[in-house]
Each structure stands twice: as C-alpha cells, then as structure tokens.
Image (cartoon, rainbow, N blue to C red; front, side, top):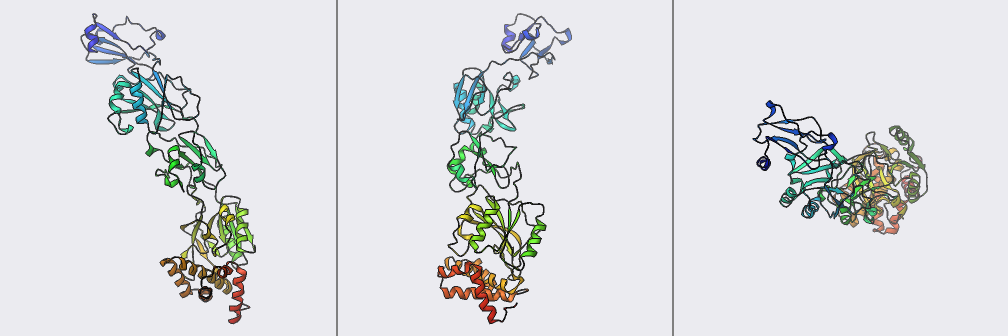
Length: 517
C-alpha cells in the first residue's frame, strides 16, 4: 500500500487483483467517491470474501474503510499439487505436480512448500473427489499467512489445503505437528472423500483377514456382511489419529488404517490406537439355543426363557442328543451364526441379562463364559452359566479333555446370566456336583489356584436349600473318584458323559434307598 501511494500521480489509485474478473461485471474504473467519502478506502468483495482484493485508495491515506456490495468474481488459476496416497484412482482434478504421502501431512506439506514455484498453491489428495469443488476460493488478505484447511466430509482435519508458500516455508519448519500451525479451518466448504474399499468376508473375527490383506487405500472397511451406513471419516494428519474404528458394539464392521496392519499379531488390540466410542449401528442379537437332556427343571426354565426373550425370534431348543460332544455340535449346527448363546436347561436365566451383548471381533475367536449363581454353594462363576460359543471352535473340539468349553480359547464375562436350578431333584444335584468336583480337582492338579481351591471347598462344605445334601455328597464322591483314578485322563474322561455318571448315581441311590425319589 505504501509503495502504491508513492507511485501514484493522482488523487486516488486502484489496487486490482489479477484473478478478478472485471470484464464480467463491466467494472467502472472511472468511479470516484463523493466528497464525504474521499478519505475512505473503498473495497469490493468477491464471491467468497468481503475483501476481494480490489481497492480504491486516497493517495494521502485513509482513516476508514468502506465495503461495497458489488461482487467482482474471482477466477482460479493457482498451481495445484496432488498428494498421492497410493490408492488406485482416476484424478478428479487437473494437477501440475504430484507428491507422495508417507505417514503424515506435516512432512508432506514441507516437501510441497519447498518445491512450489508460485506464490500460492492448492494441495489436493488422491482420496478426495474434486468434481464439484470451486478452486476460485481465496482467503481475506489478512489471512495470507495462514494455512487454509478444507474438511473432508465431516472431518475438519481434511486432506485439501490452500497455502501461501512463503508463509508456509517459515511456519512448517518450526512446528512438530501440523495442528500447531497457524491454521484456518474453512467452515463453509468441504470436499467429499472417495468411498473406501469394503472387504466382506465370512470369518468369525477380522484378525486374520486384516493380517493377510493387501491394503490399496490409507484405510479400509472390513465386514462380515453387516450393512453399515455411516462410516466415519478418519484424519490422516498423523498416526495417533489413525485409529481402528469398530462400527458397533461387536465390531461386525470395522475401519482399519493401513498403518495398523504391521502391529497386529493375535488381535487388533496389538495396535495402540482403538476408537471404541463410535457406534453407527446395532448388531443383531446372537441366536439363542436351549439344550436339555432330561432335566426335571427343563420345562419350567424353557418357558421362562421364552418369556424373557419373547422379543427375539432366534430362540431354538434341542433335546436328548446322546453324548456331550454330539449335543454341543448339534447346538452349533442349528445356530447358523459364528456365535450363539448356549443356555443349559439347569439355568433359570436372569430377566436382567443383556441379550444385546456381543463378542469382540477384534480379538481371536474364543468362547465367552458368563456367570451363574449357585443357590446351594453360594458361589457365582461360569459353571452352569450361559456360554457364547464360537461355532467354528465348537465343531473343531474333539472332547479329548474333561471340559468341553475349556478345550478351546475362552474368556470370562463377569455378568450374571441366571440362577442354577440343578438341585431340583436329588439325582441332578448329585451328578452335577460330582462332575464339577472332578473338573475342579483336575484343574488344581495342573495349576495352583486359590479361587479354584475355594470353589471346591464350598462344594464340599455347603448344602443349602432343597437337595443341597445330595449336592454335597456328589462333590465328595467326585473328589474320591479323582483320587482313586490318580489323575488318569482315560478314567476321568468317563465322567464326560451323563450316562456313566448316572450309573454311579444308581449305585449311590441304591445305597441310600433312593431309587424311587
């Protein structure tokens, strides 16, 4: 402005911008202000800013600014530099130069600023669609030393920038992260991202799929065919923002950044950045399978289950399948989904049980064991509780051990699923306690565990309520049998099937004259 005042030989001088379209509005450069406005600077707007870069200025200086209403359209003729994110794409913008994105925008923009030859540059990204973007946008003159950021969809830390090169060269070398620059987040303009690849698979978790995938985009969606509408727009400014984003409680669909893949070994949580608070949808309720083998409490517990799950349609029942492994596999086959709720007939399910619970598909496949309250022993743990079984693991289980569930990876969910009614009759109380005591003794022979010791002690000492005495007798009989077997696995495996256990009960009931009980 001062230089223009010195060069001027007239009372007023014009400052014009080479990108303004004066012909389009037949702009009148002979215009002069009225006498009472002669000490003002007169400024004309563009389609984007109140100060469009066209000024009429008094040579003697001004004490005020008068902003006019007539719009002088700005045109686009700035250099465009294109950031290549490594994705297969058909550019939606004509660019002059290309620069490769490595792992953050700060270093990328430093390279752009050093290589740029014009005063201003547009910086565009290969993952965005510029088909409808107006490159005639410009900042106000007082914003020249700012780096202007355009949102990508709803993500304000977008992938499109307008840079004053000289200012950027000074700023970018002084900051450690891009967020610390003098930034202007342009509020009223955004650029849509191109749709990321969606990888549909049939595995029960995403872990192996992600590990073996060849990424073609900075981030990709993995799904087991669970429809997702609202996919979040991830910031690519630096790695801490590139989080794995589960799209629902059970992570049936998940957005994964390319940077996460090298970290994932056994579970997605091997990668340090997980955004668990995002939710775009609700996972369908897992199938529910009720399994009965002649328990006297089965009908009552079945009716109660139907009542508390009446809003769900995936409640099925199987009865009297011979053999523990066979019954488990039958339940898995009728479930029809990678996970299902297994409800034993001895459990009266809690009315407060959260049927919307979901397995974590960011981990390796496993069974999830809930808790059940035992009215006889006062214990509350996974015995006789609901189990969310993984179908594939169930079908792969041979029954080589003495506990079907524990043969495969499993986790404990400290949520009470109901109350065990195994003490409904003497036989069921005795045989249930017998089996559990054998399993507890076998576990203690392999691992010293205070909690397991306490559980076994309670089975042996407590006999609360109806038929509690037979529960106590069964537990003692189980311990005695284990001691006689001296841990021999082949003999212990006999307890795997209820028919063998019932034969033992027959001997006990005869001794106590309980055949007709």
